[in-house]
Structure formats: structure tokens, C-alpha cells
Picture 1: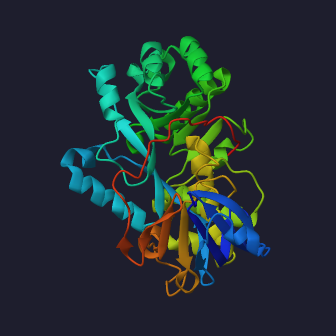
Picture 2: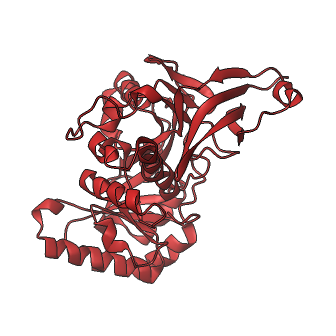
Picture 3: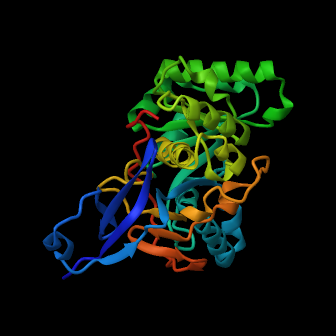
Length: 374
């Protein structure tokens, strides 16, 4: 039985640290080979003639990962949910990190229901659980890990809540289960900066002491430089994205523990980089590769390496960062839309037409958020 094969040639492959011309060979939804050489005819025809795509006019990026909260959309029904996912696909998103809010009354059966493949997703997705700090207990954590949860967003309103957590028992579980925590301070804009900084410091101290990998929403990523390079990560907002892009464009190989959602990035931020291709590399580094590593699905997602899922975004070169004023705050995901999007070796979006299949997406469960330095 012949296997499904695709050859994408002539395009410019965008990596986290540069752009190079290469041919991608895809077999059964996986990237088989990436290289500049011309492969032998026998290799090209083995297992059936490949579907050849001329990408000479395109940049080829790994598919974006979006951090989303789709629970309210799911409640509206199948049509609304599929429409929302299709909107994400049209922006180049090929995987979703979906956040699910769990309330105290939810038992194991309700947790299982929340984790079900609601409405048969169109693209692959990871699950992140959202809990109030008071509800993060050893018993709850053990229950969640039974459902293969590897990321938990902890909502904290006051500094005292951090100290009241049972860190002694939680540390052993989090270390054993390899679960990462995300700190989200509620109503952080209403808190004084000094108080927020004290909360960040308390959280960082606890996590480093327990050797827990943690992401912190809203923290200045530059404040994490010089601390433990492995366990700490900033989930940047739009303002911090701009600072990070500007810094990395001048310090290309410098370490900066930061991830950005592609929907937070503006064209103005990206155009401040030295040139267009460098901006694309920074986009991939912060919004794709780092996000996949933090979620624990790298290199299966967020890379164009052999063995990775063939999730691709093709941007037309003539449309990249052109005809836009430098002062504009236009969103990248709204203006620089892809011409083609591929998920696991199949085109799911072509020239504004959706080709995705309901039920093609799957939940990624074997996540490893402790495997890579960001």
C-alpha cells in the first residue's frame, strides 16, 4: 500500500535563528527530510510519486500554537466552536493550548467530561487546567494527573494565598508528575507595582526551591535574566513582546526566557527588527518554538525537524511586512495571513478556503514540559 508523500520545494524555511532555502519531504503526516540537496530519483519515487508543491514565492514556517480559552465557545454549540477554530486556522494556527476552568464542585467525572474531544476538533490541541490557588491541593493534583494534565494555571488574588499552599507535598507531586505551573495574578492592574513584585518574588522563591518549572503571566522577562535559566519563563503581553523582539534583534543569540502568543504581536513590533527575515525568525522563536517547549509538545510541534508533525504555514514573500506604516499597531495575525496552512501533512487552508476535517484533531497527552531549555 503506497504511503502519502508530499514534496515542497523552492521555499525559504524559517527557523528560530535564520532562514534558508530547502526542500521538505513529508510522509504520512510527518516531516521526513529537510535539505538543500537534490535527492535521487529513486528516493523521490519510492513508495509512490509524491505530490510536488512549488513554494518558490513563499516563506515556510512551523504552524503557530495559540493559547486559547475556548470553554465559553464550546458552550454555544458545535457551529460556534468550529467557526472559532477555523478563524484560528486562517491566522496560521495549527495547534491549540486550550485552557479549561475547573470549579471546586467538579468531581473526576466532570473533569473527564471537560477533557473530552468536544465537537471533534479540527486541529491538535493540548489542555491547560485553570484553578484558584486555594483549590490546588495534593488530592486535586493527583486527580488531574490521572487525566494526563501537565500544565496548571494558578489564579492568585493575594500574596498570602501563595504562602498558604501546601508546598511540601505539592513539590513532591509536581516533581514526580512533571507538571508545570502558570502564575496568573487576578486584577493585577489594580494592584500596586510593589505588591505585584512581592508576589512574583514569593512565587519564584517557592518554585525554585521546589524545582518546579513555572511560567508567569505579565512579569517583565528581563527581571528573570540572571536567575535559574531552566525553571523560569515569562508569558509576555503585547508590550513585553515588543521589548523582547527589539532586544533579541540586537542580541541575536542572547537568552531571554519568554514566550508570546502570535495574536499579541503587531506589525510595528516585527518591523523594528533589522530586516524582514530576521523578524520572521524572532516570530518563530517566541511564538512557536518557545511556546511548544513550554507546553511540552516540542519537537513534535513547533519545529520543522525530521520526525516532527508536518504542520506548516506558507506566507507569500511579496505580502510580508509590505505596505504598512511603521507607526501602525496592526496585529500580525490579522494582516499577514497565510496563503496555505498544512496540518499533519494535509492542506487544511488554501487561498481563503477551509479544507479541514471535523475529527482530524487529537488531544496531545504525552507532554514533556521539563525536557527543553526555553
